[in-house]
Image (tube, rainbow, N blue to C red; front, top):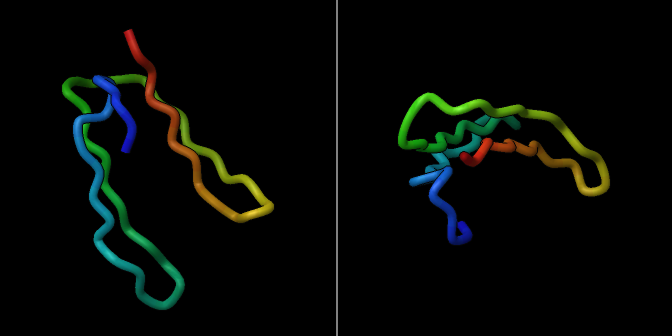
Length: 50
C-alpha cells in the first residue's frame, strides 16, 4: 500500500472457489467507487481524498 491518508489499512481475507474477500479501512465515511478492469482482470477501489 502506498503513502496515503485516505486508506488507513487493507486486509485480504482469502479466496475460496474463485471468490475473494478484502477489507479497506478509512478514517471516516468517505466517498468511493468500485469498478472492474480487464487485461489483467482486477477490481479497482478509488477512495476520495479531501
